[in-house]
Length: 482
Ligand SMILES: Cc1cc2nc3c(=O)[nH]c(=O)nc-3n(C[C@H](O)[C@H](O)[C@H](O)COP(=O)(O)OP(=O)(O)OC[C@H]3O[C@@H](n4cnc5c(N)ncnc54)[C@H](O)[C@@H]3O)c2cc1C
Ligand code: FES
Ligand code: FES
Image 1 (cartoon, helix red, strand yellow):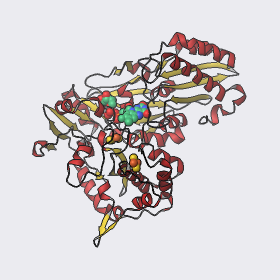
Image 2 (spheres, helix red, strand yellow):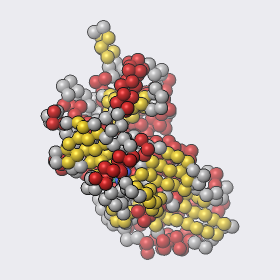
Image 3 (cartoon, protein in one colour):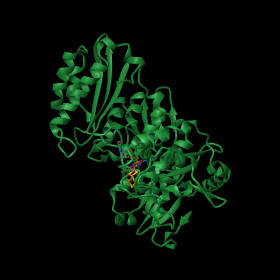
Image 4 (cartoon, protein in one colour):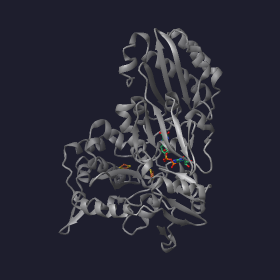
């Protein structure tokens, strides 16, 4: 399918959903605060068809979404919530809640907050205190204060899903399914480049072969921020977010396989039961709006020293599957990341998935993230640890850290200081000292080198205290505390 944006003056594939929405007359309700995914003022909801006839509603930051990413989705903005019935303005139930709880002052954050509450309204599984906290964490409010907003949102669980979107669902599902029937690649000219959006893996691989310089994107939460608007217009993008074969999670006898286009939110919900230490770190990953589009492949592809999933995945022994149009290979995550924001991916390859070995009986896994704020903040230092003890002796241990070097990596000296030794505070303290042979951390605006080293050491001590010999009962059964 070829789309010609030249027929739509002022719009290109690099236009953000936020800019596009606000250019529509009468649609300036969606606000721009930071333009970087940090404030939630631009929150809108995307709906797409899941299995059968259901619609899946997801909050996103419109400032980070490139226009072609919403192909085949219903876009719901703040303007769509209130209705005029027989000339009378009727607020949506979530708007009534905000008004009723006096949860609005200047109102600048209110459209975004309302859309996040609408997301909770449409996904009842999230209408509990913990999930409500997470769902609202990406919306900053500088004057009302969060208590009133939270009180309003807490009422949603007791309400029926009864609004105009229930009535329009059959029609929307029919329309979205009709769009989905055409699985030919969407090709959009983008200045001197193209925006390519395949729906089938075979086509994605062929396109990467034909356009080796194409920039891959999945959720675009890293990518949208990287290029200036001017640059974005002439680049060739290969958008993998809609490739069906990359959207699945499967479970084998001894591993989990996470498709490249699985979102961090899908992975978070999956890991709650299957990999609690991953769930723990993903609860702190960005905001709901970010998690709803960001992917694991994007986190790996970015190869950031502070990518949150990376230390734990290294500790788990995860591997990355990369494919070209002619070959598929698997490479350990540790080897895959070669330098600061660099991986060993070839020009003609894409990441198709991540293989995470299931924890073996007796192995203890844990993850830690230290950041200035609990939510919507990147790590200062993070860690993923795996430990196996037999008769009080450390048989094997992996200590992987983020935020300590240009890449997330293992602390081999500290591991050696523990291996074959008693799992005691004394040996752990020796390993803590050995960390200075592993890392010479950097200083930046976030933290100084000495602070990073001190945190890295203390995380190891914390791990010991959580899994000290007198708590060996916890080694297998209860890994998600602390
Ligand atoms: C407000 C905000 C908060 C954030 N908070 C966190 C946080 O708490 N923790 C954290 O770790 N990160 C955070 N991030 C960074 C980002 O969200 C993550 O790195 C995310 O996992 C990127 O996934 P994505 O799908 O959006 O990647 P994209 O932006 O689409 O891509 C990122 C990189 O990976 C490459 N890539 C994407 N898909 C593939 C593929 N299939 N094969 C090969 N290469 C690919 C791209 O070319 C690009 O280089 C945050 C970002 C923002 C804007
Ligand atoms: S404008 Fe702040 S998150 Fe989009
Ligand atoms: S009401 Fe003013 S910023 Fe939230």
